[in-house]
Length: 211
Image (cartoon, rainbow, N blue to C red):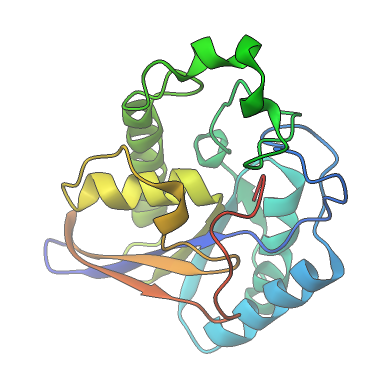
């Protein structure tokens, strides 16, 4: 089994209905927008013909919705893995846009003391480790075939940087993880041999609040 090729796709969910522009994080009730639903269908069409054996998603509504067109196409149930959930963030429920958000208030500044960890939320290393666990669970479930894991921008990008041996602290404006994008891990046996990235639904601004 050491030479068996397995591909684990990490799919970022589609656009979310967020009229107030808040950082919604793990808050319940944030569903896909009409555009987000269309993005999910585009990804399903992009993956048609692939040998997908396993579909799993974060427990959050937007991720579960994004997985549905793929699961329907493949006639597979959507599994849930808590390790794919959005990163915890102490600014959850607030606006954090530059110039008009919570970051302007001195009451929040103590949360920003260490961007390398980061001090305002779940440590990057913990995110990377749980996401890697989810990746290997999906690899084992789809051995010799392909798996789709629906997750969120920061966890996917953190995992990619960890696997590429790059510092996990980064400029959020430079994340290569658009809405409904696929970051694909190619394994030979248990060994990661390649990371690929594609945007079936087109590129989006990585600075979109709460995405």
